Image 1 (cartoon, helix red, strand yellow):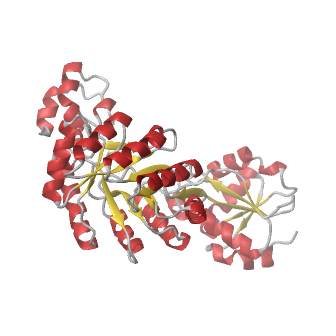
Image 2 (cartoon, one colour):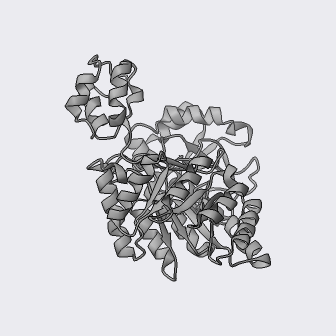
Image 3 (cartoon, helix red, strand yellow):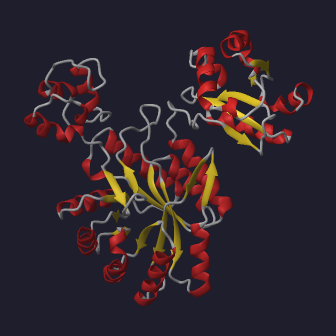
Length: 443
């Protein structure tokens, strides 16, 4: 049972050193009790207290690793029900199901489609995380062939959707070193599947017919010595899955119910698989396995996942450096903006629409927009002047004219005085950039 904040406080050094990031040891104890801080940030805690407090400092949902190497998928370690309370740590892993009923060219084509499910958004690359080989045909040899082909032709993490311990054991002889997700242990096979998971150090999905059976199975597997688990309540109707996902998360976070202290896995199949997956991503699923590989359906899911798991207190930012639009020469215009991704990509898109090659200088404002940064003192004439000098843009153009957003007109005089550049006040909205260039810029 988790310790209360006061019980934890009695075991802390009570130095109020603030090195943990909290004002007092009592405040830190309350954070530990709520699962919002880790004991490792306290430099003065004794070994005896550390041992006693280890359970209290563990997150309510365990961290589980699928795969090996730098591309391994980590899920779990979540501490809150709502991301505005803190933030969600590990985005939902999306896995695409590959059936062993496919062979030859059809299997190769399916693998190729899965490998191409990668998308660029806001300057970063996102995609699916797993290729899940499903045992459907009932022929172990054919399943082995499918596993072998998938493993040889994709670098994605693997999942073995196989409830037959014998077939799973043979497949693991081929791919056990890649540490795939083993799906799934149930009431009939959990001992054999747990033994396989322990032998290869795998994440093991535990599937019940309802929440009661799931809790009992999770306890049995843990007693067998394996704690790298994912939970599947067995429900397939979206309404029931949503209710189960919520109950599991609340039981783990609010009540510290240990059998549910693991991330969850959901399976979405059929014509509504994409809609179902969107629901599961929004409500706590750590891994979703679905049977569509249509890029037009996967892209919205990847985008939705990005929205859910982006830290709401930390905007998406790009690197502060000189960017080129088109193939700008020494007479090209130079635009100033901030490094908030959305602002930058709006400016870039509208400059592209003007068909005028240009340079863009996004100042580092901790990922905040132009007016927000100006109001917070993160976008000052002095900071802009320093960035202008450090960026090296002066050596790439034969003029000294800088176009600033219309919202920064108030600082144009000071900025021109500090930098020596001629400051052109641009439009307040980037959509007006094409018209602005036609009227005010001539090369």
